[in-house]
Image (cartoon, rainbow, N blue to C red):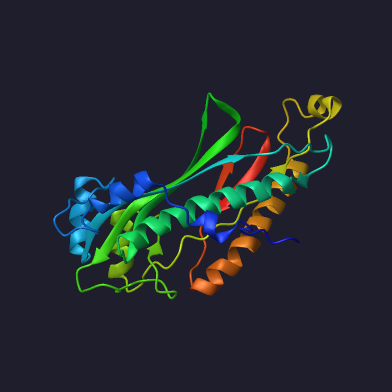
Length: 248
């Protein structure tokens, strides 16, 4: 079982455009006289303060990636490894660049991380992978609650859940990801007709989803283990007809 990972050049991964540098220089994290930016709601901002953190700036990581094509066999469940690798590389680039912006602000963490995909009319064969969140700093002083590697922690928890987690004596460490793009076999016409009007288990589909989830979990597990985090599974259906379980 291949364990996919970021194979990009590190210089490319941490690349930060000049426009981003100018934006970050005006925020509270880089300039004491600057203002903070965030995508937090009013209630989230208040809870963040009660948890002992202050927002520094809205951080972004982006990667526009050409995703190749891979055909799946009509009657066979199988992982589409070319697409899985593309998803891994592109998402890792976006996450690394978002974290680099948080480092620019000397942040202790990033809360409310969202990882999403979008397309543009001028690039039909390309997808933009966008990672966003709010960089935060603990009021007790720089370095509190950082990840074991000394950099900002990442978490997709809302401010409410983040507050509850801290109240329970736990801390977020890292947003971990396991991806599997999986082709589910098509059902034959005769088989479909025989099942019309009947309650029946769809074993081929069930097995395919099981395999895809297990692959995703197996790939997220090592990252979660190294960071001491426990993965949480989310399942999403892709338009290409495959299954892409995501773990965060």
